Length: 209
Image 1 (tube, rainbow, N blue to C red):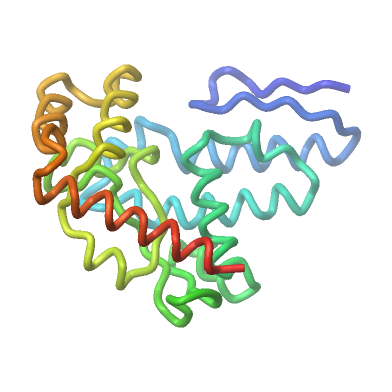
Image 2 (cartoon, one colour; image 1 turned 45 degrees about the horizontal axis):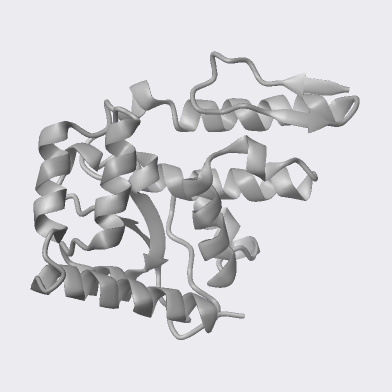
């Protein structure tokens, strides 16, 4: 039996081959995410208002996977990457999930940042593009200490994401040009720092078994 999620749900398209009560559970999970990540609601939030929501969304995804639902159809690449990060950093134990269900930061249990708080970072810095403050695709989980050292750095990764957000109608052309200017020259200090920082972050995830 095939079930397609209602198109009225923002950003989600669900296809699952399950029967009986599992389909009800799928709808419940989809409704939770749709409400939590509704763009209209996100737009009304205050400063960093979406930070707690990404924690809650990761917890919902884990619950969905435990029921053998297809997380790849349940949300988009940004949330799946955050789920992968949370898993690699050992944040998905019972205590971590309990924190996330309440929108709180989990504790990192694995890797070089063990014991640190799991924070939410803006890939394209809020200081550079405030309008992306509550855009889920621009939010990424990472250790708090690493987040605090990142500052408002802009490099090739930020430029590439800005292009995608602009194409999706989530970023104005004016702000896109601002990001491009910040990352334009490969020898600019900010661009070099951003790329070095991202390499360090990727290495930290690799060292987290």
